[in-house]
Amino acid sequence: MSSATRTTDLTVVHTEVSDPRVRPLLRELGHEYTTRYGKDAHAEISRYPDEEFTEPHGGLLLLLLENGDPVAGGAFRRHDATTAELKRIWTHSAHRRRGLARRVLAELEREAGARGYRRIHLTTGPRQPEARGLYLATGYTPLFDTGADPETIGPLPFEKHLAVTPYPGKATDL
Image (cartoon, one colour):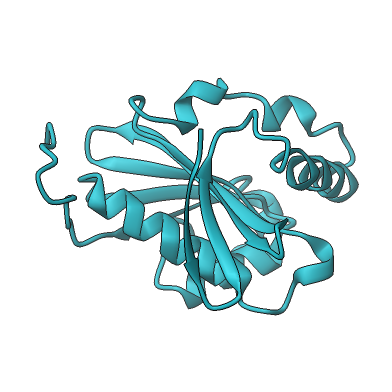
């Protein structure tokens, strides 16, 4: 089951990992991770059960569709009672440099805040300078020494504090 809202030329769809439109993005994400890190990344991508990215488990997966085709997406899962963890942020290689990842982040942040989360946590890999730059440019606080060689750190953690704006009439357990 999925729901959609339309703004400009993109459609934002809330969906599930089993949606066939998710597969091309995850496949390309796995290929890129494998290329950058020299090992099969499919185990990392499938490390979390699909249910963690849906209600009532506290998560969400969304896609940006252009003319019905997936061009970007991302997800969050419950990290703890007040923190959502971003996962699988991705833009199709043919659609990069258009601000789509920023749009995905904004949508995920809005949804996480509306669900009562107060903080977002995420990690990105040391060989993903584009992701590091995106998170720094969109207000995420690095939880590591930005002057250090990223290869000596491992996964690069970030956080961002959110304003909480629950859905009208929706109780939160926070």
